[in-house]
Image (tube, rainbow, N blue to C red; front, side, top):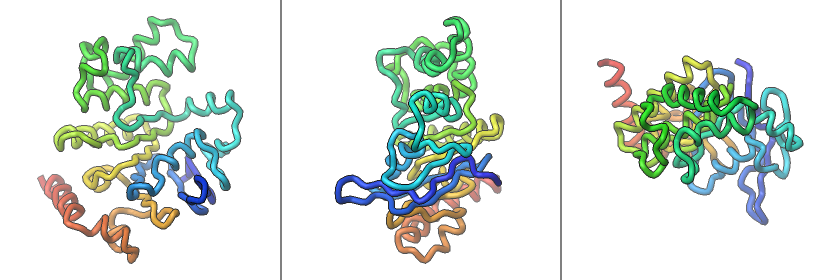
Length: 258
């Protein structure tokens, strides 16, 4: 498969602290890649680097062959139309209703009339399973699961090729988290998306991720879930061979058998 995002030799430092040291990683076209790592391993910094919001000390990030670490503001805005981002906890604007939140990227990046923006925003909300009544609500009136769905609709507003999701199931109850995974998997297939998910949810990693990239020792270890369980690195073994991982695998196998 061809890579749609290539992280090449990235070094990120903050003062005397080196967070990433010659880190390499790829997101392949059409895959769902789960990005995991311990607290302070630099998951959010890596995401910001891939989005061109943080310039690394060394290295490059190529999206569709274009280096996002060296773009003008106009080029960055144009490139941003190729990806959609769902930030942690949804990050909806509290002063806007749901429809306006979803329509905001369309207003920023297109010249569509307001009526068309509202129509398209409503379509995206329907796509993620939110009823029309939710469109006029404020974010504070939504449940956690509904906030994530609205944020996902906003991330899809510009019909992106690549979707970046930051902890999409964090804080959700198990039923809502499973529904979120199902929705991401369905949209991935229907829209032919390439998806990177920052997550610590083992159910997500087992159920919908094609590959996993784990931040270890300032670099990335990449492979399938099965590859991770066979790793000889202590940090990887601890994460993927513990009781929670075994439970997630057993649940997935039971669901498949049913």
